[in-house]
Length: 438
Image 1 (tube, one colour):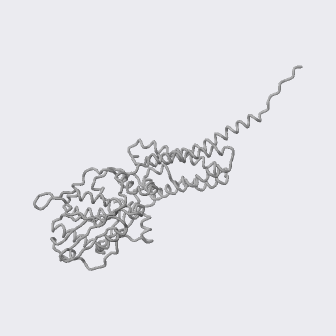
Image 2 (cartoon, rainbow, N blue to C red; image 1 turned 90 degrees about the vertical axis):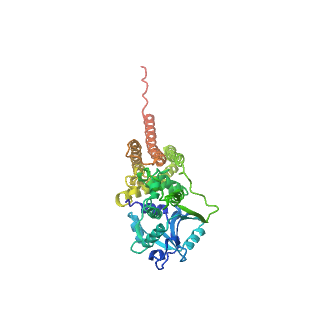
Image 3 (cartoon, one colour; image 1 turned 30 degrees about the vertical axis):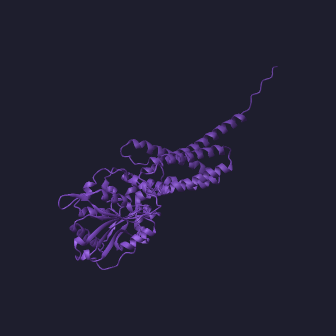
């Protein structure tokens, strides 16, 4: 199983801890006291929130014994945000666990966050209810509760999906073999559309693992997708008849003003191309303006280098480090390294040198941009090969014009200097005198 997801987990923030975990005695469905006909199993979906840690929403399973008056919510999104966790996260590992909580207190917590709380009571046989209750009660035990989190393959929602499917004898997975309506990247982009800078950063960091065709089963890593699939599923009953899996749908809380997640990923491509052309073109303009050695255009051009060193160089360096030294497999062999990499970070110190008039910095920057532009053009040319199938056209539209513009700016500066030098030489040449006639 890929272990890259802790990176995405932290950056995208799939989960929030919903409510304080229960420290109580085993539930009656875990000790065999509950009868299947008295149990109610519900899938609860919480809509996305405002902060990064809640953009993806959340999901839980609730078990209720109506005869004994006991109910517990099972939350697979528990993690500890401490220095130990940060160290594991940095290397590509993140341990989550499942915990019990009070359903009502959890619902009230999400209501206080102005997030929808939608409850689907599942149409299960008594035997299936007992099985799910027993599995949840077993999973929450200290010796069983931990798992290695993966944002797409093993998270708080896929655990619910797998448990429901197990109780149904594989009927959910069998119904979800159809192709998904979009890739994992497209789902990621539409859920992160609330913050364009973060959306573009994540788009940059992730490789073609998330561009491959997937099934509807794999789409159910998202709470909303699992909710939708469960609502559409018809399951076979003991008498052989088909019936809806959802017996009853209840909206505990519905936000009146929260915008829904867009159904399609945003179309950033044209805007990113315009931005890339503008930034790359500005370097050419500043080079032409500074052809006579003016201080202001030189300082502005140096400042642009400093900004690009930060905005492109830092993510490019981080991407290279994550590929070489961590278990973040979703960053490995990322084609965006053709566009930004550790070399791009050199624009930061050299930009400061340019601002202060360093001739050496100017010379090195000319070579740096020439190399980076050539590398980006190579990455674009390699797209004709099947192996280079990463969906990074938006990043190419943004970064390639910048690299070409900055490389062109220094070539233009060199050309203007040669022209000026040529004119100076011609002006200094002696004019031959006309010999006097004797």
